[in-house]
Image 1 (cartoon, rainbow, N blue to C red):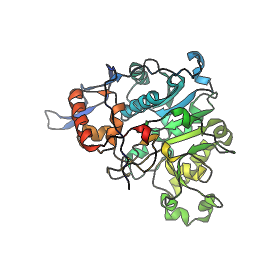
Image 2 (image 1 turned 180 degrees about the vertical axis):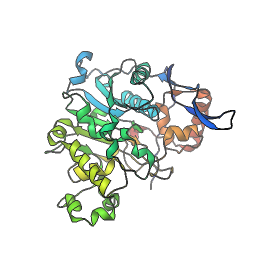
Image 3 (image 1 turned 45 degrees about the vertical axis):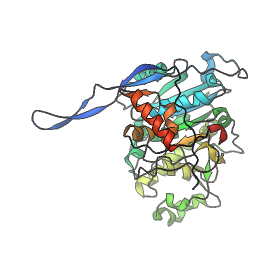
Image 4 (image 1 turned 30 degrees about the vertical axis):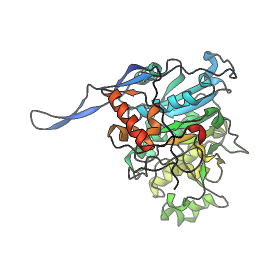
Length: 381
């Protein structure tokens, strides 16, 4: 497959360090020889992003009414300690490349069982993005915990991974449309372009579809051998789509009561093993064959390898608007371990994480990048 590489500019952006929350634990040996976990003194620190401003063509909107303003871009993401670094980088990328960054409202979904206080998460976001319009919501994990079946990777079993199914219930009723983004994504194009996607007919969600993928593999033989279950796709051209990037019509979602329909399939899964991949298959079962197809440039997914192996992958041929490290490998983990993939250097410029030795590692990454990546720019993709 042809490799598409993009130049990474790690130029200084007049960024300033701010303190984050204490996120790390470490194993220590007690006097009795037993191992126990204790909270590390290491604090996550983030840099303050530049203040990205609207272009002259952007409407001037009141900050007080942004939450319910249908003319602005609404983006929903989960926020938690494990993926906080990815979430911050994703927000940074949206603002940096947006034509009207002040007209974007972020809806962050936090778990009610997190050890980190939502107020602390709020302060982290505010300190990294002082002018950002956003709100942190609490997701009640007991809504879905009893419905979750074990999958092929433990990370997929997190209740917060299912929060995307409850956005219509969590967000205010005045929010009629939202873009959902996973925390391991980077946007390298104007988010307004994705927001302007038209959902034709009665379609509730839009996403890049991959009809060449073997759709049968997403469900078990028990599913396909049961005519009562498998007829859900009868008469449809159902294609695989990744739920990490979706445009969602919340009015139609609420009218169709799609959260309950997804829960129904999760209950069936508890009785009969019909899939292995966490929160994705219920979306395929409910929306497969009725998705508004969006250009593939808006989800260059799979950059983290597959769900079991942390492997390096090249970009798919064609233009790029959004990079997605779906799979086991995450760019921040591979960069920190000193074992990055080439595509991870495309994520690095949006990373606002600051740690001891940050500047030395940044210089090392720049040198390594020059050796591994030829000079292209996102504009040429």
